[in-house]
Length: 251
Length: 273
Ligand SMILES: Nc1ncnc2c1ncn2[C@@H]1O[C@H](COP(=O)(O)OP(=O)(O)O)[C@@H](O)[C@H]1O
Ligand SMILES: [Mg+2]
Image (cartoon, rainbow over all chains, first blue to last red; front, side, top):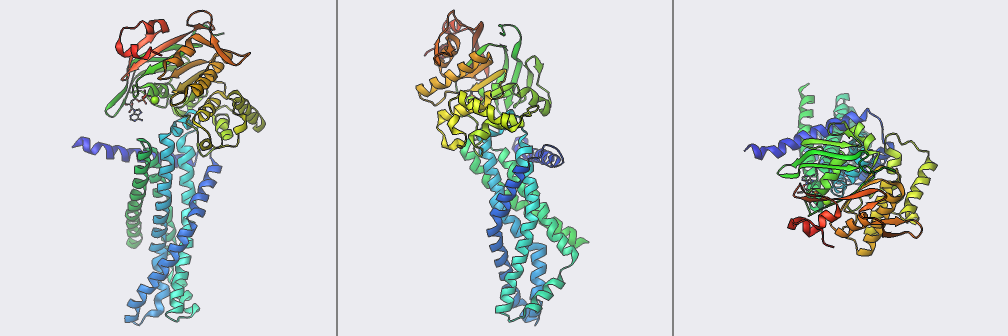
């Protein structure tokens, strides 16, 4: 029984050790600025198309779904308000994080994992660099900067998607939609909407890098790490989302 | 010239390394002197790679002590280990090259990042070119490792290991999976590095022939070939030691003649060409 529990417990311990070191390194030299910029490019620019598309369509779908319900109350005018609140607080951060987890947690796990099984991680240490500092910290910093920005873009495109439905299907005027959307948002919504992607960025980068670093067993092992990283990161995004939301609702 | 028995480059004192259920090194004691060559033989999974990684401090032993150049590294923190690693060159199995970097960037890596290495960009470039010329790959600067053949990747790995002119060189199966001609080229490079700089050389291999090259031959700079050394098992005053591993334990340690005379069937298996 104890033997059965040992691997997951050790893995969790390793995860926190790695996270601790990666976060400590943020304030420590040397900083590998080139690596940070490269990662911002892969994570940010690379995820842009998928974030734009999911953002737009989730906003549009939400407007469509809400219309039905709002019509029964004769409150179709509130479409903008509801789309804005749901998007900014919830759908924007979570959908963006899931998309980026799907692309980049798995990407980091496979990239670092193949470096692990081909002894490149050992070579890094042998040649004077700390793999946490050189690989994990730049990915963490880059994700923490880029994910909130991507979320803002997704939120905005979601609102545009909602607007398309409101304008073409519900025949609302632009002013009606955008005014109600804008006025619905409070500072705490914006704060919640930005703190979430910031927190999810830690999950995405650290889970991806952790599974990469833990990879053993050749090419097959890389495949396993890749899938695990994506699944675990996605689940933790939902769990973390629950607790952050609980905190804001509790206030 | 560093004579034999002057001081130890590497010393293992009752070292044990365990991974979950396997004992990769089991109470290993071993001493390699400066200027000496050491040939490490053994079946697959017998702990040869783990031995080299433990010498570099990449793996920490569960028991015992490891000394590099007389300094105990067993419990050194990572940043102090880095200073010692700067004096060691390691060629990983398959080369261990960074596939996201070009050949030039790979070879320049230790010059950029090793502690205490502060070279001007021109100096880095000059030394990288020199190291690549040493392995006769000066035309591949801009290539990526994936564009090179297996033998070329090993040679880039060697260039990256020797670019800092380390005092101790560790080669992990440098000829594994190569055809005999390419293997000869690699061994010639290893001997060239050893005989021009008198670096302590440790070579893990599964080919006995590699051991014979190291113990009986030397590099002739005038024609770039390996030739039989005068004397017997003594190259440039330093001996070549043979070590045979079996499931994490030292099964044999001694000279080439002793190895060939060894009665143990497992050990004798490795003393055949
Ligand atoms: N990082 C590791 N995790 C778990 N087991 C390992 C690790 N590295 C090596 N081993 C095990 O240690 C033993 C010795 O491995 P190694 O030194 O690589 O053998 P070889 O002599 O072929 O180089 C093998 O059984 C191997 O599976
Ligand atoms: Mg090996």
